[in-house]
Amino acid sequence: MKIILSSNPFRDRGMRAARQAADILKKDGVECCFCLPFELGAVLPPDLPRDMDFKKLEQELPGADMLICFGGDGTILHAAKDATSHGVPILGVNLGSIGFMAELEESELSLISRVPAGSYTIEARMMLQVKVFRGKQLIYDQIALNDAVISKGSIARVAELDVTADGTSLISHLSGDGVIVSTPTGSTAYSMSAGGPIVEPNSDMLIITPICAHQLSARPLVLSAERNITVQLPKRSRKSVYLSADGGKAIRLSGTDRVEICKAECRTQLVRLTGKNFYQLLNQKLGGGRG
Image (cartoon, rainbow, N blue to C red; front, side, top):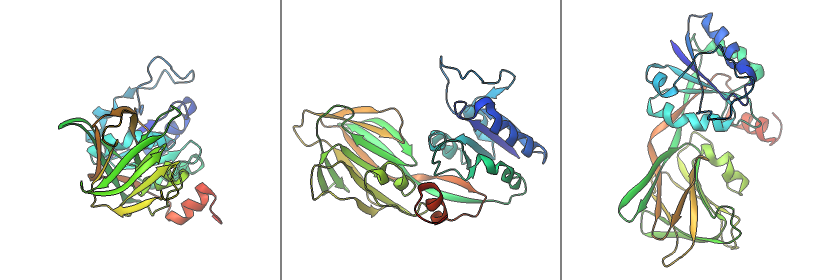
């Protein structure tokens, strides 16, 4: 069994959690390799170990049986695209604040010993396919585990957006800061903060949540996962907005650009070890009541 240990070096100081996990797994004969979840660039953590041999994540994924991510939800989201494309399940270890997608807290690292014995389950999560067309030309194509956000950016003005389903039915003409189209997994992220509903993460549906709408009639909507959502600026609009999938680099949209969002064919596989159900996690992570 081969497992990739991918740790955010700005959260896992000195890579202590990743090293501890490797020690546990190697006792059961697991082959481990260390990969950084992103390129560090010019800014290096001062306590990044110099003796560790870091491999390239994209080169190790094709032969891996599991990817363990150490960090916050952002670390898991960053890894989800590549891991999903290779069919590799992800186990999250939370070193951040909420870490809603992570299965383990750092204090629960000893439970990783269940992995070599196969004492875990896999939970498949719906993803979004997010495309942008400029006329007939496809200029952007990404998958997202959490959400696609179309917003006005930091400029103090109102964004106007037309949201349609299946290319014909106008769902809403929104005026405000923007709109979030999320998966059930993403329902506990930005969508929830904007007033959207909390949805069981292993279900299939599309959630449309206005951001700071300037309309009393604007409400979140839950649609069938079989719908195809289109978001674009109204005709003759001279404004521009920005699109970001899973908090990644934003692209600017203007004119006749249109964002098409639907259920992706692939699914992210998350590893479950603890047996906690969604409502226990909801209470534990978000303080919704008794844990």
